[in-house]
Length: 181
Image 1 (cartoon, rainbow, N blue to C red):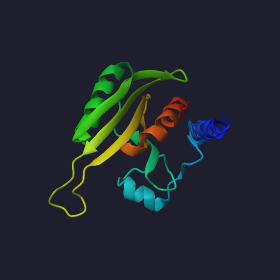
Image 2 (spheres, one colour; image 1 turned 90 degrees about the horizontal axis):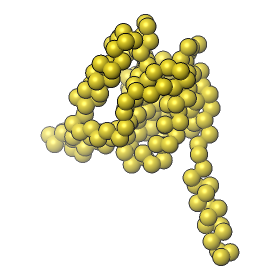
Image 3 (cartoon, helix red, strand yellow; image 1 turned 180 degrees about the vertical axis):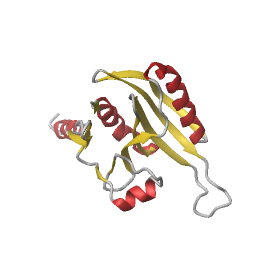
Image 4 (cartoon, rainbow, N blue to C red; image 1 turned 90 degrees about the vertical axis):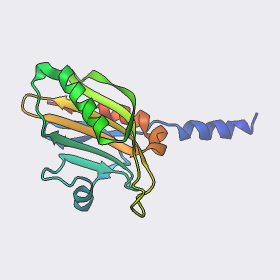
């Protein structure tokens, strides 16, 4: 029995919940993030978000294989059309990848605001004609949308599918901590 005590102690420490710290994205957007995520460098942002519009906030872990970002979508929706917007965003996600396995999705209330969310695993097939790009890419993602009067905000997390188990609980807590004024 004495030999099992250290094992159970190690086991309980290994599954301790990740501590989240309230992080200000803009003056009217906050989210609680784990201390393992740090702001992306300008080089990371240029490489990962090749767009005219830079994200409002972008964070990555030390290995640069797990990312969280907040963006303003070019798509705007009237507040009353949240169900239609949810269908549109789901279709957009399904069109981005070769395969999408939905884990969860729908409309949820967070801090008295409605958010559309999708949690899924995706696959992008490799290109058999390109050296170094032949293997498929598998990802775990959680994307959440807030439709405001003058903008649509996109909160997105993604990591390798193999890291889903270590991130899933933390990501769900992060997304439920979002506050938009």
